[in-house]
Length: 192
Image (tube, rainbow, N blue to C red):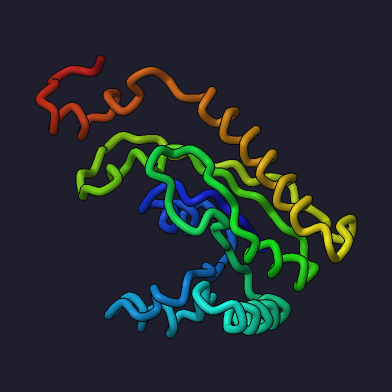
């Protein structure tokens, strides 16, 4: 099982292009009600979690655990929604409850740059954005007792914070401006 920080609208595409595995993502149940997209998600085997009703949420986690035990790789976004700033937000516990229930290794994935590809609250696309992804070592959940979900959450938060700092340290000033499409859109004829 994987957990990643939801950085922008481009996350799923970036992960699909970067990860050498097939995976399904874990999404809130309401997304399955969106016309066309919800139908596709159901047909593709994505995993719905009901966040509105605690009893249904628990049932969803049990069903998701069975799917993961059956060999499906799953990615959850523990913040529950995309970041508007690219910063890590507060983690919700559902992904970690699921991870502890499955007892499969948990792999933190950190993304940086996706929030700059499509500007939040707009459809403005910024070409030339470099999306950096770090896949951390799997966490063996056998070292966590049943009641230590919050310790696991904190450990993963610290890993992702460290990785996000590392990825941001690799950015170059104005790296988007080096892209030919960016320069064409913004009327700059030569490379900076």
